[in-house]
Image 1 (cartoon, rainbow, N blue to C red):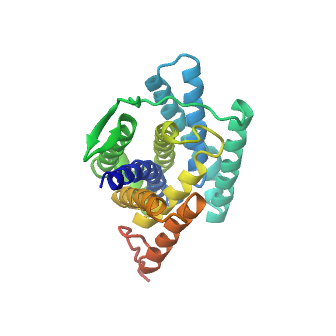
Image 2 (cartoon, rainbow, N blue to C red):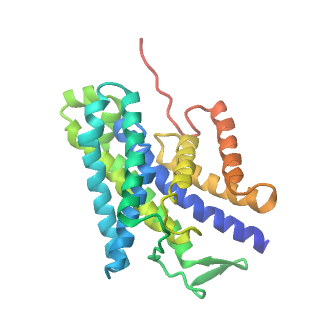
Image 3 (cartoon, rainbow, N blue to C red):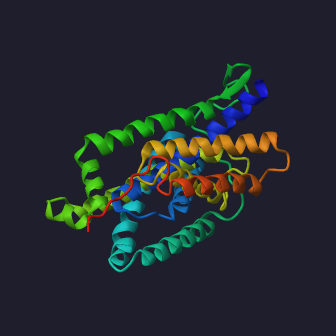
Length: 298
């Protein structure tokens, strides 16, 4: 039972990171109706910035705050300068630009900070004695901090979309940008805010996951996490915040259990097995478990 609890806690910790990045994908989709395929590398770049600031004697929380602010600024600028001009042409053009950003951000990070692995300090206590015991299993401070961060973020995003004017405008723009503009919604500003908020959430995912990763901070750190987060968003539904969280936690626990109890599964095969199960579910519900079906009147 102790071993099961340890694997469950590990899965929930990893799943929380997947869920946070999946929330970023959902925010972009709900604000603009598109998927940002550069989300993972944007998170990677801002995490490198946070790490660099810590090497300049910045306190870890100040460095994280600066990374989140930079993420918001970069996300808003990317939408305004790169995505918006091509979005009017086709969705394929947006995809190509996002893939270009994916490559460009990764290359820029390598150019500025090199390809060697960096050690990112944790914002939470993670020493050998910084844990609580749950049924004999140890829950360390950084794992508990990630779970708390996910809950707080989910509450804040739910309040944003349901209780604030900006959130309601984001939903209106994603549903029909032309109608929203005619109704007086400042569409240009809302699109930039949506991308900025998503980029800041991605930055948070990056700075939280890196201290937990065995590979620490490198140029390939965020790619497998982005793949799992994308699967989580599709699993729960690209327009569902709760679905993204449940999808991320499900995939995290699934990966942990598969690698723990089926010895032949591990590494990339572990991730592939989880994605195959997601594909099966999407055959049954193409919009995800909590996704909304779009009805068109003809």
